Length: 483
Image (cartoon, rainbow, N blue to C red; front, side, top):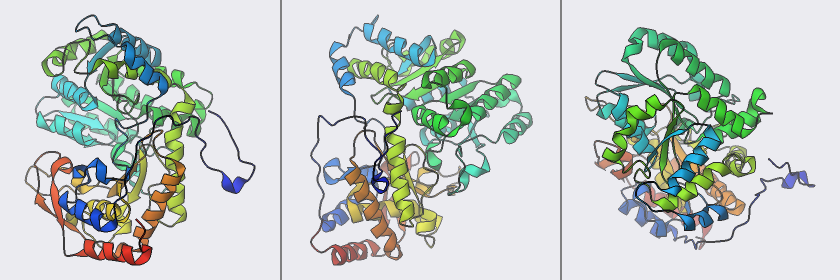
């Protein structure tokens, strides 16, 4: 990773080690139109149209800027149904990065989760993890399993100096296995970069300790490597034992210890698709039958071959620290700017994006009026920026219909890699600051249409009262004819 210091230290900013060669025109609607659009979308940022968005910070999944080499590789794709050379190149890339020979393709990460669940989760079984992800949990509970979260308590403290807030509570992991019985545990899953609690990383030491416990009790260990490149960046910059390791050495150490690794290439590799891989053929054999059943043949798994070629190149590029550092460094810059402004934000900066702590921004809005979703709707009105609710709306109701309130009420401002300029990041910080200064105007939301599963994708809500109109009016008063 290049170390470039500015002569004038006060001007120090992250320095991109790439140049932009293709651009896409953006639009910033007037605040009155933004008010109308968010209400038409049922206050669900997922239902906004891209043409109505200035900065799309809803996710970093499948929206990253591909490299010139990835785009070039797409032109040599082999679309043979079976025996495809494209798949051979993907396998070779997986072997180079992880050192694993057994590879199953899937159309994306959540498809890999479905295959894992189908193969190993039975009614009454448990899956232990540092923290759940929405689709992971849905696949497990759909099959009659239960998710138990065992993240260390430090991971739920919004602002600390701890570098690895995604770590497992190892004592609690061992205790839980003993209480449940190893035969009742489908697998233990480590999410390398905990999505729902601020993209916080897991230390190498903690991951290896988890696999030791799994091997001791004869339980499968599974690594969700979708955010692993961010996690590796944090290992190398925050964990002393990793400082002089190469990225490849870290990937291989993890692959040597985990039974199964899966990932979404929409994140790891900056393309499309998903992969399940393992050293031991026994595991991929146990899951193999589900690939043609749910995905496609074993050489493409529902993926389009041009995306597979881009994935192969992207995986190799994920070994390059200059490639993987841009996201975390831009995120840290935004977090630092927001922190200077006094905006409550999750610290230290993690992967994925900056995470606004909505419980502190709007402390008077109760969980059942969905504070994180309300802040997301308000932010769109204030800026044209689309973020993503990572709070109670992203949970699912208990079987009896009661709400399961989130541990943290977060609004995620994802940072797609190699997409935004620093001036856009500064615009984001500026508009969040204005919203924070006018937070007393933000009110709650209530359901209009609530799906039973993954409601944050499809559900619709409405404002309680007329606070959104008041917010738009205050924006116009403060900014005049500015967009």
